Length: 248
Ligand SMILES: NC(=O)c1ccc[n+]([C@@H]2O[C@H](COP(=O)([O-])OP(=O)(O)OC[C@H]3O[C@@H](n4cnc5c(N)ncnc54)[C@H](OP(=O)(O)O)[C@@H]3O)[C@@H](O)[C@H]2O)c1
Image (cartoon, rainbow, N blue to C red; front, side):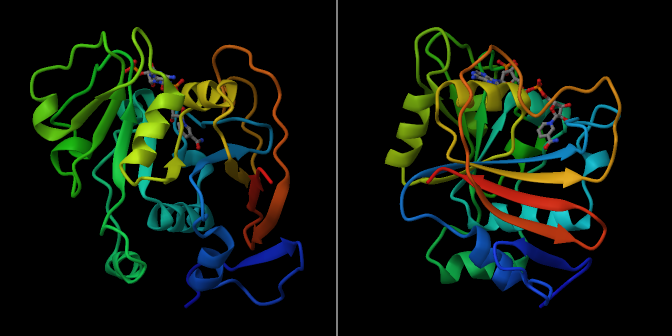
């Protein structure tokens, strides 16, 4: 079934027909080994937000792929900054997407994994309080959880004074969560890049000049450049580009 604004493949092998959800799912899919996939939306001139939020960059094609990426993952990893700022709610999938997960032997919903050094988290936030699957909070040994957090989430400690992201991902893999989708934000992406843990970037390019001011999709300390080859280019009829870059 094709819904909304048509999306076609430009590269490789251009498609004349719009891609339905089954075709898009096949293009993004799951890997046969552990994988960390990042998903971001940016403006043409590289902004990560408009008026402080990602919503001004996103449209129906981006939301459609965003939902499909959530559908195919085991865990949805997000930094505490983005969780707080964007007011993350509980992960929800419609019945069609839950049915796809059941048919593919997956849990009904992906597990939310929140990365935080400070544990400045609100257990009453819907992302925790209404979660259909108990979330995981990835932090370090020195962090003190606020009252109530351990009632609504598993607190996983990796690293002494700061989060050891490589150890954290390895522990998620050990728990059977191997297909990881990370929705940012920029500081977490920067740290994951620095640790050379990023296998894939799905980037939506919005046909918009946001102008000076907003940050980029990555932030934090400098890290060596990493080459990430292009895998596909999709275009939506409203001028949005959907790029997938992944390690060989
Ligand atoms: N365009 C997009 O696709 C997109 C996607 C996501 C976010 N955004 C935007 O990005 C902005 C948020 O960016 P941000 O700079 O706040 O970045 P962020 O990476 O979302 O959040 C930073 C916070 O997350 C936690 N964190 C991140 N990396 C960590 C690490 N390696 N170890 C331990 N904790 C870590 C820390 O939380 P604690 O303070 O709890 O220690 C840190 O203060 C918002 O404006 C949001 O709208 C845009």
